[in-house]
Length: 125
Image (tube, rainbow, N blue to C red):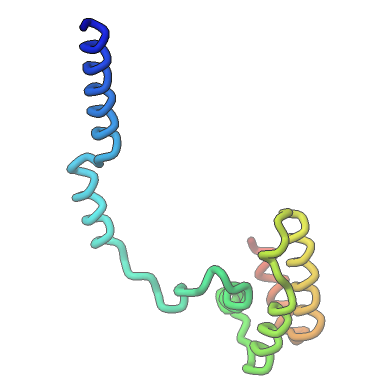
């Protein structure tokens, strides 16, 4: 009898702690809504696909002030399409792949002025 009472009490306490840990405090929800309402809307150009390396790269060039022609944009998309970053699980392999992709773009797509602007913006970072 004492043992079953002990187990029952233990289970009730465990359930209370589990229920309390899953619920958020009442003030947290109100603060989250207020901070979301106060936050400025993200600019349209920041809405890029994080899954597409070409979109990330084109956004990066745009943020550096490098304006690309339609042909250059198409070339960058075709070059990035050749590289499959998702297939590589090793971080070093992805970095090597990214470096070779960047080198190919710098040599074959960007004009010397654009490459110089890229290097200058990269040095500022």
